[in-house]
Image (tube, rainbow, N blue to C red; front, side):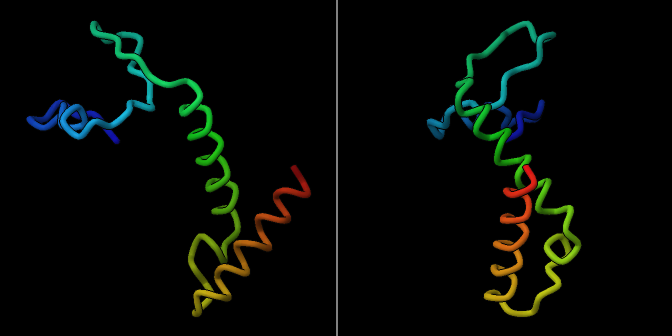
Length: 83
């Protein structure tokens, strides 16, 4: 969820959502965030970035959903074995 300077910049407060991304250090009003959720979000984003390095997954080369899921499983296994 991004925080913009628009009219609806504080809508996330109305929806009772937890803040995951910390505020910038230069902001006058620092807001709290959950460091554990932030680390988990970082790990998941890195996983998607590594999966997108495979051309067939980034462009969704397979026509059927089952073949695409198989390609994701194969790429995830390769990433897990190398990492």
